[in-house]
Image (cartoon, rainbow, N blue to C red; front, top):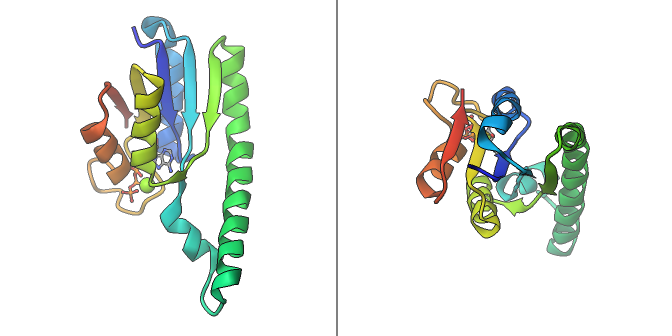
Amino acid sequence: MFQKIVFATDFSDSAQRAYEKLKQIRTECNAQSVIIVSVIDEREIDSLANLEGFYSIQIEKLREEVTQELIKQTEAKIEKCKKELLELGFDVEVRIPVGIPYDEIVKIAEKEGAGLIVMGSHGKGILQELLIGSTSEKVLRRAKCPVLIVK
Ligand SMILES: Nc1ncnc2c1ncn2[C@@H]1O[C@H](COP(=O)(O)OP(=O)(O)OP(=O)(O)O)[C@@H](O)[C@H]1O
Ligand SMILES: [Mg+2]
């Protein structure tokens, strides 16, 4: 039913629970391929780069270095999950775009014609008392396909 699934992860506990659910539902869904998406949040790059006091020419370079480092770290974190999904027989693709998480997740799902998006209800944000986090909420509002939000 959902041949192509987008799995969005920020490596939080909630995203990990979503991942476990993804593995459980694969037979029922007859899913063949999974696109693992982990977005480098562009709003976090400047604070991580600690840009205060630098000249603009250095700032661009610092931003680029921080971005490349974050992509490298994310690739390493995704590796285990990618391997496991391949062993289960899925076709697996990995996407690590830089941008606003909900926007990138929705764009990839649409462009790839995904039938389902699987994600956690919360992430690494601090407002855990909210019903769902802002990424989940915005993906749910804007995606054209069904969204499975795992508690
Ligand atoms: N950068 C990201 N890339 C891919 N998926 C993400 C990203 N951020 C969040 N997600 C997905 O969205 C789920 C919910 O996270 P969300 O960001 O909505 O909650 P939060 O971090 O608790 O809240 P907020 O970000 O609003 O402070 C995560 O479990 C994960 O599946
Ligand atoms: Mg978040």
